[in-house]
Image (cartoon, rainbow, N blue to C red; front, side):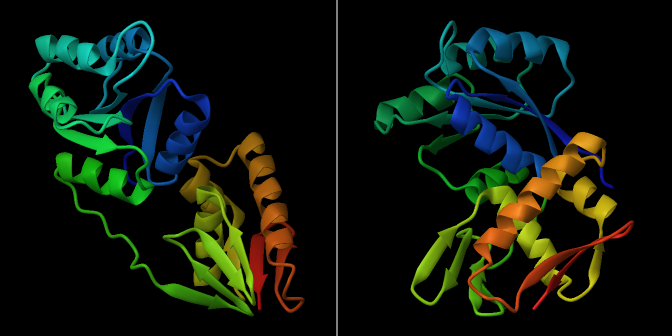
Length: 226
């Protein structure tokens, strides 16, 4: 497995922070999550990281202030701002305080990942926005949706990545350890239990087509049959 990219994510909205963190972790990032500006700056001083993602509006210390303090210690590390602000002056301020990129909410995870890799000088291959047929369903990884007849079913990012991996190996056993390491980052007991929960959720979302099954193969892994 390739070396994980260590980043700081400072975001004070718990739900959004968790979504971003989990999405990045499925793409080979190690995320240090901070709930306010002071915590983010402390993490920066104490951890070896490659990039910083800062929400602008945070308690204790806002993102611009954190960036200003970081730049006193390091003028090279990439900094990405996340904000709901849309005024041109806010964007200008972001760059003036040392930011390298600026993403306005709401944004897609694919866009954030592309920008991060661009700042790090790395290439990333993203799938085209194409539809994949799974039985009577049409699966779109980019949009994280399943269509069946008139039904449109939304998937979480991790559900979509898991289904994509299973569909790439349709009717073949996918090793359990491979799934856990690729999507969760390790294959310990707790991530194994989490994977079982996600498999159960996918079974329910695919239940409109009785010919589709996700089966567990004891001691090996699981298989998408359709």
